[in-house]
Length: 395
Image (cartoon, rainbow, N blue to C red; front, side):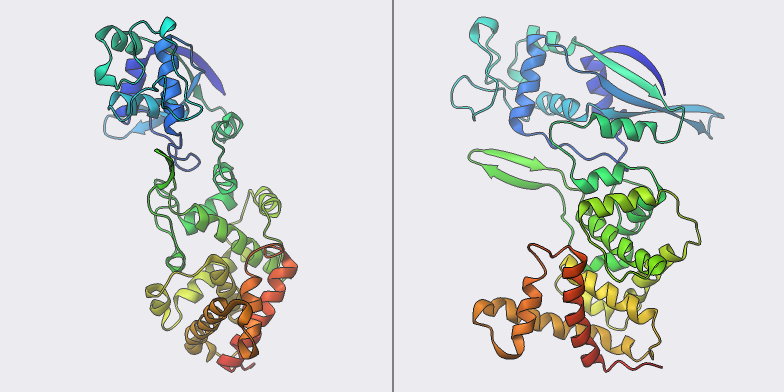
């Protein structure tokens, strides 16, 4: 990787970020996640004249087909949280910390070092001198050009600190064909490859927009791209079906380490990889079922229920069965769901025919629920009930 260290004023760098001149790469980066107190602390540090860590920017040259030249795009690799805090403060989105009354952990500037008294003030309330000094701060920027594939992705992972990425967000940043496969079919907002998730994933929930958690008078806003849990679910499902095709293994552990190892072992997937194509065929099979729309229009499936549904379709689609099951699967699955829901409501008072469903419901979460043994035990009961309801027949 080639590096060049440059110096920009805060005004120039923040202006470029504000005007989308420093986009992030959403294939492996998240949105802003800092808390209010972290934003306040950063602005206070800048007003004191403290030097900030390096900002990292990735330079990418692309052909300018209109001008027959080369156009350089600058992607922000590290420093998004800091620039977002600066942008929000300059938009008067928050005031700086007060000497009293602020939540525990906020930095409060001592008056002896703060003769102009910027504490408690929003951007428009600062003196002109403080604003000019703030905008004139010199920030160090490391501009980079890749000399080999995925160098910037690797650097991004190594730079992460503070509020950690979730395990699936880290996997999304890894290079490799399986990473792209998961993003392509499960979706990832803001990316070209993940803009059209497979219709199968309309069955499961997504988080829309930011989640807010309130701590007293303070709010924490967590960025959620809406499909991160869907990608985690699909990674486990795809891994299971691919292991079925390649190794004849019916179930595997869905623990983080197992999934991580599978990502690393599948950096390259042939276009005609039978295991990958079996996964796609399973998704297509479920979507093509009669009355699939009834599932889409009903309550969203929990991920573990969608998992068992997909694996049932995979088994039937690859077995020696008559096609009659296709007409009955959705109805039988909805009946199974209703019995599980009734068993959950009944809890410890459940007895008789619903008792096995209550055991199935308990096995969906808690210790051992993500192990091959636990999944196999649940699925055996699920298959037995579904086969009875559908009157499955072999050729």
